[in-house]
Length: 315
Ligand code: A3P
Image (cartoon, rainbow, N blue to C red; front, side):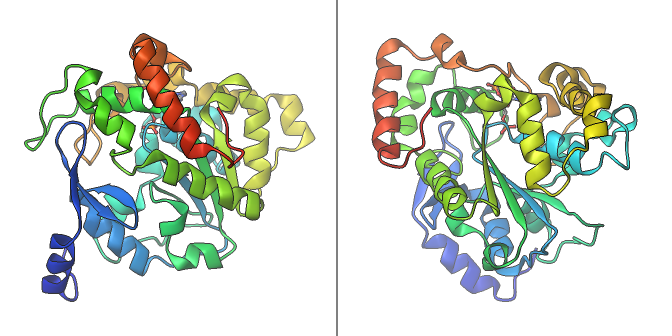
């Protein structure tokens, strides 16, 4: 992609503080966020060029918090008049293609991607609330953020990286190897506390604008949370739909077991190079207990408590 002033862009990138993801992949610190170096062009272009429409729905998250699930759910809710669950595009197309990311997909490929699709447009990002393009804050578009217990999020991210194959990364064999990075919040789109707190505060200040969901709540009661999601996004379920079991059908379609077993998600490859299967591992709450030793969990938990202290956000 060509920028208007390529030299000054390169200079800007060279001046950003550098770090490493847990597997050694390069990270750049920009707006208090550790971005994967490969997508910094998309990050800047998204910030500068995206113009929100009032009907847009933005899915936001820290990676490994349930983004794939939320994309499938919101796509199904919003498009339920067009496709019955049996004919859903989710059956043949992965959630990440139906709801593309701004930074590491659309704006990475082009400064002016074609966003000319029928409203409501559903688009996704990992940017913190404080780094979103101005027009998202200014317009009446909606943002749905999904958050996950940081202990499970880091375990999920560790496994994701372990499967990543790239020239610039080293094979990760044990979580001990990256535990110091985990504790310091150095991870793709981290620190986790900046991501969570930015959306948490925004959801308290602008509840009609930002819906803050927790992965654990969705696991506990998907029906209730589908209703919240539908109402918030302006597509509430009717009484008749509730009676006809439409909510249950959507929850089954988007369930971990159903999506994971679809051919496209078992064997397909995402345009970023990841196998679609990398987005479906265990889908459980509390898996951290199988991977962090009690002393690791205690140390990391103290950090979580310290960082979230006083915010009202708890796990
Ligand atoms: P685990 O690694 O703990 O299994 P993201 O979509 O943000 O990349 O997050 C991936 C995590 O969400 C992985 O967690 C993955 O298994 C889980 N996940 C993916 N689809 C899911 C679904 N439909 N229901 C519940 N969890 C899901």
